[in-house]
Length: 593
Image (cartoon, rainbow, N blue to C red; front, side, top):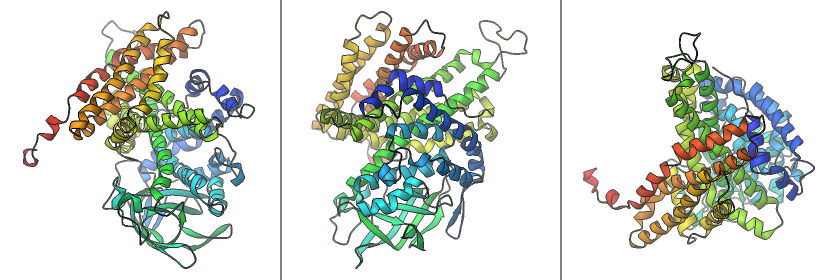
């Protein structure tokens, strides 16, 4: 089994060359704090921590899992000590408000560290990862008193956070939730109900767990318009410390396919004391802060599993001797050639590479928009960033998790029979990756959000923000030597993207089911075009640096060509299935299935 190593050179290529993060930070007033050398130094320290402390616990967590006994949960061996070191190093506070103990660095930098942590050990990463969403929610919607009390402890890392949405009878349809919030005389509320699938819902890593909970007030309207949001701590605060145990208990842990090292809890709230966050009956609006953070985080999970699988399968394919190359022996002194010589093995490796590296470009492009939306003082810039985030977040979440799962399966396939054996970690990577397409709304839910709400309900305006950017990029490079193999197909697909949206929109006037029938294919088409845009830019950079000794440039150019010739053509089939319509799906009667 090979060890995880952070691919810092690839991160530097994306951040400092492709996406120009150094001038980006300068434009936000952080040029002195986050010059290139400082950014590299931070990532190097994070990489050491991930490689030396967290990665060795990945398979430990899978083997041992979390143990539940009488409502208490014990995390796998080493998890608690690793979390203590993580807190002592100050990692939880990096991208949070200095007024509450944070370091005030941009969200994008926190995501960079999260990528390294998550690829090293996704199950462990979820404990601080869920806290980040809770912190963002409190920062944006909490009162000053709530921020002083809870946010400071979460930023310090002494307390962790969760989000509690799902109930046994409802998942995505939160309008059906039944958890009740009854007012108390002191202005707080009694929260009663059951929540399931709560990641990091109970554990022994922190002194307290702050649950962010959706519930209904007694006079709330039906449906999603009657949902409020509450803070419900595991232990009631007593000054700056924890006091009495609150009425929230872990009834059991879910028996899961993967991510065994993270506790997925069933939580029972029995008149637990909670406090309202934001306006009454506007809880879903507030919770979207948490959910959008989580969706980007889940896109990161797709990248993490693609990256981990690629690293391990690449190392294996270079070492595993089996068969001879069809074009003649390459390892003439050995009994067989390394399997990396075989074209089909290279197809599997390069598909993983294209998705991992292309996904990294997409995520850090999105992170730039998050920075601009949060920090920039330019209203037009903020508006454009907000529009891009609305469009690209569901694409990133769904497309990168689908391709991350595909990549994890390809990595396992590279190992042959050994991929099915636990010691190599490949079957674990597949199992861990599988949930990512379900978390935070399934692929179908993200696709309906993209096509229905973000594209059709805005009459295509959100889509045009991004397609215009791609159009201008292509227009400026027409006829440039060496780029036509990328620019011409990208321009055609970009134009077709808008045309497909129009086609579905017109069809949906006659039959609303057309949206549901086309949405997943439309989202995947969108994802392939997004990655094509970034691979074109990577190829352009590579062509400008052909005289340099660094092999990353030739690698980027060749991977871009592979993506355009062997992966991007999938979009042609998707265009046809998008136009196929709903009839062949809806013609079936119930008893004909």
